[in-house]
Image (cartoon, rainbow, N blue to C red; front, side):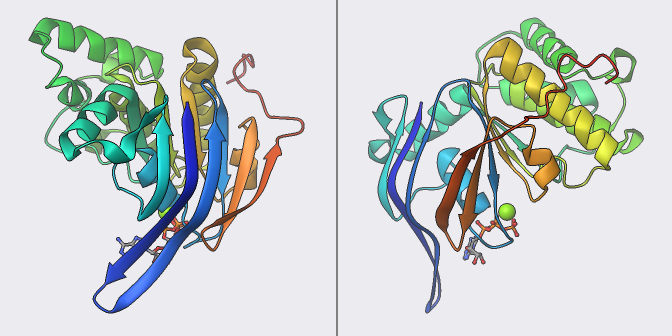
Length: 238
Ligand SMILES: Nc1ncnc2c1ncn2[C@@H]1O[C@H](COP(=O)(O)OP(=O)(O)OP(=O)(O)O)[C@@H](O)[C@H]1O
Ligand SMILES: [Mg+2]
């Protein structure tokens, strides 16, 4: 579903050039749950931005479901992104003056659906993210970090994406809350078959994925299946 061929990304700031990615070759199958690990500055977020169609590579080819996305216009990229990809970030990025439900409805604005249906979809997405129903009219500053991240997951889900890209989604959360978020991501992966690409610094969090891709100085240095994967989804305690 995702195939990168010889992807290189060079950032130019004035005279300074930074090679963030070097000849990345990577395949991610539909419904896979992959973790990307690497030290700070190794190119993880750059890679996620390219996979998520937020940025273009300097060279190389990217095929998303067989479509060579290099050839698409900015508008076509944006449409494809809205249709197929949901994003979750460490910092949540919720709008403070909108309540939970409004935050989740927002990305459906271009869906062409009427308000009632958009609201219904948002409520379903919140439910699928295990967000407590009695908090949906609360504002972000009235929520815990774990709850805010559930809202962000619901917002990523609301347009029925095929892929969720999560950049350090547990980075601002304590271990227990981080686990609850991993539980939700595993559930979405196993129940809905959503492909998940998770960036993390934490080995413990990465163990929840099927496969770990290690990146260093912009290059993939290892790709390994997780032995004794942590499966939380069928664990009733969580
Ligand atoms: N917009 C940009 N302009 C210039 N250089 C950039 C830009 N974004 C990233 N870089 C550089 O590219 C390299 C890779 O950055 P990237 O953000 O992808 O790393 P990362 O692995 O996500 O790091 P972290 O774990 O700290 O989030 C770094 O050297 C960084 O300074
Ligand atoms: Mg990063």
